[in-house]
Image 1 (cartoon, rainbow, N blue to C red):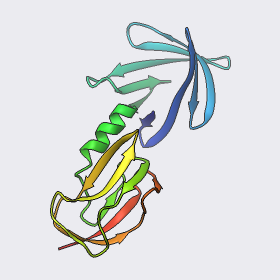
Image 2 (cartoon, rainbow, N blue to C red):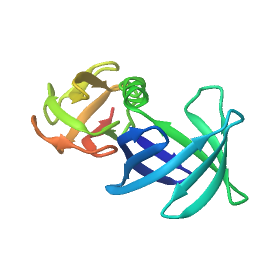
Image 3 (tube, rainbow, N blue to C red):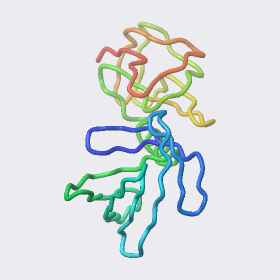
Image 4 (tube, helix red, strand yellow):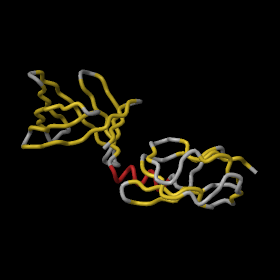
Length: 168
């Protein structure tokens, strides 16, 4: 899952959890910590002999927190696979008028358009697969395909420009 802390994005993976002992990978680096949670949202974290106390205030959505540690507060947003998928589905039809960009990392399944082809609002320009689900990225206004920057089978990254568009 992704965790956004202010402007920083970290990729976090739970490796193992046994009682209070937790092993996680954060951007590929392993951390073994001991975490004790209290009912009031406070927690105590022990890492390599150093103890930290943190206060977690959960938002109504349940995946956004305000974390206070050492008298500093941070906004933390947890982007799990479900939230990534929902964000991608919501942006399926959201296309910048000058380009179509990947809403998340995945694979190009098909490109049912050609350079120079004119599209009407709602036409599918490219089909992507992410997390074993296919999504049609559609144009939001009449346009012409200016340049196709990927091919079927390509692996793509989040926010990568896939197709350049020309407005009509």
